[in-house]
Amino acid sequence: MGIEYLFRGFGLLNQKGIRKYVYLPILLNVILLSVSFYWLYQELSGLKAFLEGFFPSYLSWLADILFPLSLIGVMFFFSLVFTSINNFIAAPFNGLLASKIEQMHLSEAEQAKIPQFKLSEEVGRALTREWQKMVYYIPRALFFFVLFMTIPIVGQLLWLGFIAWMMAVQYCDYSYDNNGISFIEMKNELWRHKADCFSFGFIVSFLTMLPIINLIIAPAAVCGSSLLWVEKHRQSYF
Image 1 (cartoon, rainbow, N blue to C red):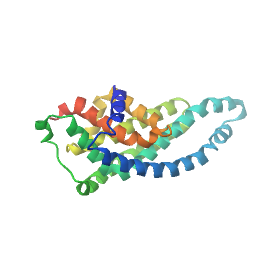
Image 2 (image 1 turned 180 degrees about the vertical axis):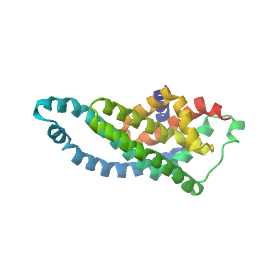
Image 3 (image 1 turned 180 degrees about the horizontal axis):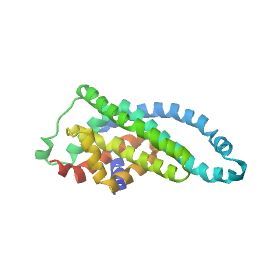
Image 4 (image 1 turned 135 degrees about the horizontal axis):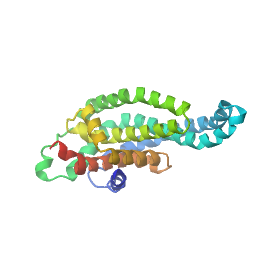
């Protein structure tokens, strides 16, 4: 399952040869996370009041049921938005990190087939791919957010599933992009491995909400998704 690959990714973070692609994004992560959590704290203070005012008095009990689900949904939304912004900034480093992890787990003959990128060459390509993800994400996020706000329980569950899917798309894409596989084909391949991808996305989303761990979740997810690519997805193409 995808969960296994994420935890294996954590074990790779301090390996020689990849540290420089890990520590600088973590520093950017710390700065962005500090600002983001301050904003989130301000917003969550009014969530319960909003729900209580949304329902008539005879349905006030629904607010108590929906508040935990809404809180989880908002936190998952925050985790995706925060991670998307952070990954947009760190995309060139993440692409190089994914390439390094792939090389470490292939034979010498297979390593020779992997394109080699420099950071200066990676920036334009990586940011173009990140933009594709954002264009894919935004209209779907609006649709699922409407369901989240209008359909009790079912809407919240669909939202959580969407967030998990987007986390898988976000991190698994680096290895596909490095190997010249289109964004559309990447999505189709991930959908063919739904169990791995959704379990991976759910655990990444959950850990992004945890203090301290969320500082290193991005590079760990890149490492884990790269292992998933090497061991389960790569053989479909090479």
